[in-house]
Length: 324
Ligand SMILES: NC(=O)C1=CN([C@@H]2O[C@H](COP(=O)(O)OP(=O)(O)OC[C@H]3O[C@@H](n4cnc5c(N)ncnc54)[C@H](OP(=O)(O)O)[C@@H]3O)[C@@H](O)[C@H]2O)C=CC1
Ligand SMILES: O=C1Nc2ccccc2C1=O
Image (cartoon, rainbow, N blue to C red):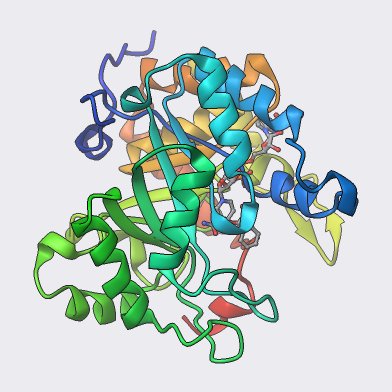
């Protein structure tokens, strides 16, 4: 028998909706949705992607209260529609969006966080977001429209002071990036409260020592791609079927009577990290919230750590992280 756990693990309890409800793991609107939206014909660009609205509604109706979106996903209208359709009061939900400083050859869409947040609030049909992130630290003269790591953080702080955002944070930041923005912040009041990064057993630190450093500085790590070991492992462009976590996940699934996805999400939570995940399937959505109802032993968490560390795999930002 596994022990019942009635409360979310520590760190994540510090984050609540405006009305004071602890936030659940997040449901994402990026990855496949951003490509799907961008790939649509010109004459459909202004119509809602109903599959995404439906997926978000399913998540909200089944207990998620935390939605992750971003400027580059172009999914704000779908989020607004799902929130409206759900009938859930805005203050009982936690909505994150992210400003993009551009990426590789992709130009920043807005002039900066100040410009972006006003557009985001209109598109999301709300007067505040719960969490405002900078999507990546990879500012570049060619694409960032004059913004830098420092100038953008100063603007994020202004958005918080203006009451447009409740919490502020970053995504894909390594320790040197965080140290730079601590200087801009001056006091811990304006330090980032969240760093959203790729995290799963095969990538336990997106950049050197980032999880420990963030947690020591009271920064919540959010994990995107937490289910990567289940379906994304490739080598030389080909799917790898027999990577080392497979038998361990099967063993733990049997031991705890949970799916391998639930084991991975619970493992993430027990590392003090909040997963951002997504599924179109109602069963998986329900199962993903059951991760608050069981606990993995410390020995099994250590086993996942050890086996995961034997097979490094990075899905996102591979070029950027070569030297970080
Ligand atoms: N800040 C950043 O730079 C980034 C942020 N993100 C954010 O994180 C969110 C989540 O990222 P993502 O990588 O999609 O997260 P996950 O690792 O949770 O992967 C989600 C995928 O897993 C599949 N899945 C769900 N349950 C299972 C299961 N039991 N077995 C097998 N497959 C399963 C889903 O497919 P199905 O629908 O069929 O269930 C879905 O396509 C994004 O939407 C985005 O909001 C993502 C990447 C980068
Ligand atoms: O959701 C996302 N999918 C991505 C793929 C590449 C870089 C960033 C992202 C996201 O934020």
